[in-house]
Image (cartoon, rainbow, N blue to C red; front, side, top):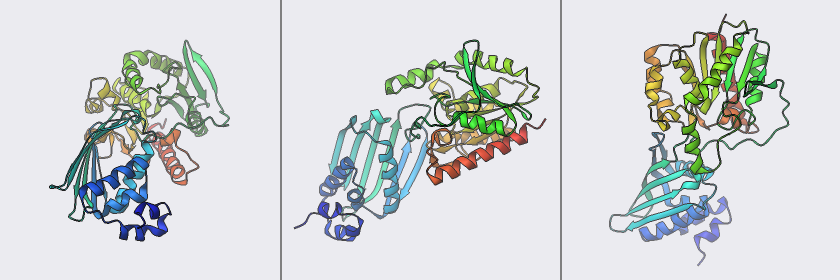
Length: 388
């Protein structure tokens, strides 16, 4: 007798044969298939356990986001996204793996700390013919500025920046443009202004008539690779640490005639923008926030919503998949912005991973389309709020 795995290895053309031959007689038999398929990252094999009636519900306690995946197609999407993050299983552990035949349930607890999954509780409920009817997942990801699904860092490119690097005292910066329309401060993500498309974004803004300056607030000490050092990094860079450098930037901009100054931030940079808005600088006109990580406020012992209440300027918010629930469209922070009527706007990108504007691979047509939409929206927002 030919086993299902023999057909699975031959590709999708044999999917119907596999389905016909795969008929588990117990929860344990179905679970053995599922557990083995997860370990092997076999999509064909794992989907044998799902039907069009299956529902996977996922709640991330760190970001407060809930997602629901329905049917076999939903299950396929779920595992594509999960395995896209779990690239390395070396820290994968499953200390609890309980099969209950009588109740047709499986209770699984697992973690993969090297990939940002601190603790996961997975509950499976099977049908009488041993297919997964419901899968409820409670996830605790490593607290960070970025969710685990963030874009991979772009490799070095041959892009030739149009501006120059300089210093304000000990603060390095990149600047470009003449400033006919005003000035824009760009605050990069935690990987620094030498990474991704940060300089390219500055050059594009300069091409729209702005003088653009992008400071290196971390003084060359960017986000560490080691998971245990990431939290230490984010807690170290309190507003008290970087705001003196921001003051130097504001002073530098006094020599330019621009009456109004906008800010554009990515990830960590959006948190800095919110703090600057709360400081009530009269020249600060508006902020553009791509894949916002204002949840850094939580890591430093405060609430996102309390900072949202202190905002004094209109914000363009562009959250994406995995960003904190409070920062999503109609989330708690958005409700505060609507209540305070400052002219803030939302342009969500639910299909994009965190970091797509500054770090996403634009050879992918969908990412390119979304990056173009995001940048065009930022130009319009700055133009609207920075008219002289």
